[in-house]
Length: 176
Image 1 (cartoon, one colour):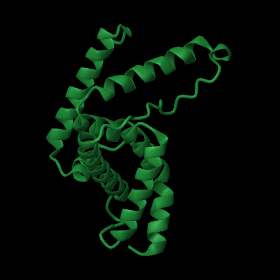
Image 2: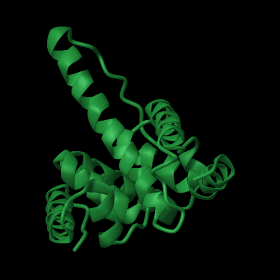
Image 3: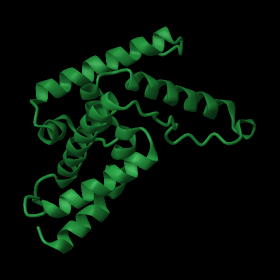
Image 4: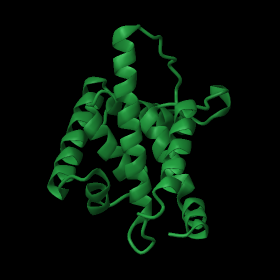
């Protein structure tokens, strides 16, 4: 893939990949770093990219691998020295609740509850759910990006949905 083709690809997929990075990391600062690392890795590996295939899933696969490696490094560092993690709520812009309609507040609470439920899941399920729902990738593309069988993707989606539903029921969000 030429440099111009790569630039066009990045321009075309940047919103999806960045959104995926935000969901994967849980905050914008780490998402920015992950997105930049993904683009740098894509530039390094541009000879492997094929514009006729599905480059969006390839970029997201790069993001997943980088994120997994970063989490491993963090876990090793954290086992040596306890680090305090900042707890930032992603995409929460509820500045003035009094000016918003009740339905919008309920919608945002539900979204936050679902995000909390997803955080409770194993990382493998989180990744598949984010790729399926936020990146809107089909099962086949997720399987290719993560190098796992389609059946495994379907299984993780099914189990993840079930666990989130149970979480919401326990939290009494009235989701059925």
